[in-house]
Length: 66
Image (cartoon, rainbow, N blue to C red; front, top):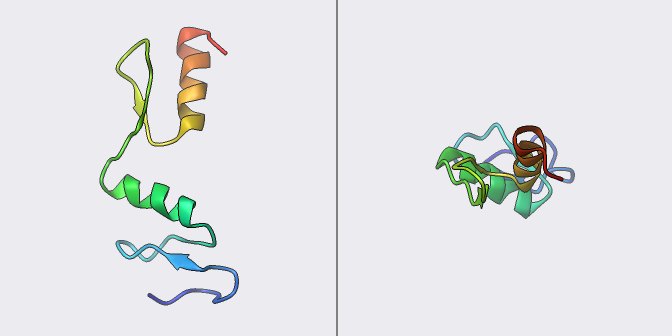
């Protein structure tokens, strides 16, 4: 896959070619969006998220927990 900048972006999404990053963990998280992977689950309801940060925001806003 072509990269916009060979030194700044080490990885490119092979499914959409619109996402590029230097971090392999960011690429793995992005690829999970194509397959609806949501490993972070709320223990108080059925909410699931692809990112831990979104789960923390959910717990604070919905359940008033920190």
